[in-house]
Image (cartoon, rainbow, N blue to C red; front, side, top):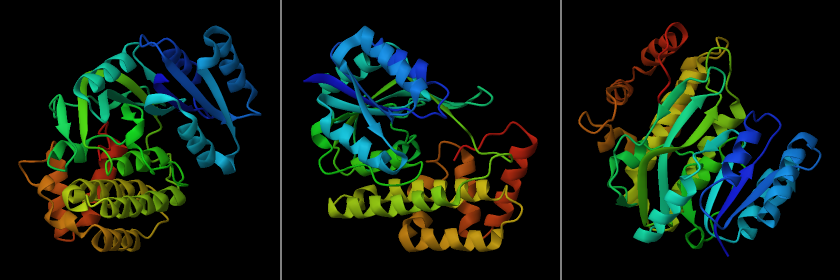
Length: 338
C-alpha cells in the first residue's frame, strides 16, 4: 500500500503538464503513486509520462481514456488506487515539494478524513493571482458538520484536498462536463467527519477565468446545476442535509445565482430577464434555504459583496447587480470572486 495515490488527468489543452508531473514526482513524501489518466494517442503527453516512468519506475501508473470514457477512466483510477489517501488533480496544477508530506502527516497525526492546504488560483492567460490562501478561517482540526461558515466559502477544487480512501465509500465521479471534481468533493462531505487545514500555500491551480472574451458553455452550466441537486440527494440519503444545508445553499447561490449569471451576461444576445428567472426558479425550488442563510448575514460574509448580493437578490434587483458587476469586470481589474 502507498501512503498517497495521486490521480492526475492530463489533456492536450493543459499548459502545465510537465510542471504538474515534475512537482508530483519530486514530492518529499515517500511511497506516493501517480496515476496518469490521458488519451493513448496523445503522443506529447505520453512522452512526458514515459520519461517519468523511466526515472521513477512502477509507481507511475497509466490509465488511458477516450473522451466518451473520461468518467470511466477516472473511476477506474479511483478503484485501482492503492494509497491510504487520494488526491485528484490535473495537468494545469503544480505543488510545493513538501505539499503531500505536510498534508499526509497532519491527517495521520489528527486521524482526519480530509486534509486541505492553502492554495493560489491563477489566471492562466495573464498569470495573475485570482484568489489565494485559506485566510486563517479554519482551526487546525474542524468537524465537517456545517457549522463553520468558512466551509461554504472554501474553494471546491479537488487539487488541494487529500482524502482518506476508506471514507470515499460509494461516491464516484459523475458524467458532468467540466465540474466532475468539484461535484465529487462536495459529495464526499456527506461521508467525511473531520478535516485538518494547513494555511501554508502548497497548491497552485492555473485556470482560465471567464471574461468578455470567453463565453460560458451552456452544457457546463446545466451540468453544475444537476450536480448540485445530486449532492443534495446524497446528503439527504446520508442524513446530513439538515447540517449541511447552509453550506450547500450558499454554494448554490454564489455559483448559480451570481457567478453563472454574471458570466452569461457577457453574451449580448442572451435574454437576461429569462435567464435570471430560470436561475432563481432553480434556486428557490432546490435550495430555497439561501433566502434565510445565516452565512449570508452581514457579520458572517468574508467580503461584503456577498451580503450585498444576497440583499439585492431577495428584493428582486438581480439585473442591476449583474450589470454593475459585469461592467466592473469589463472596465477595471476587479475579479469575479464568487
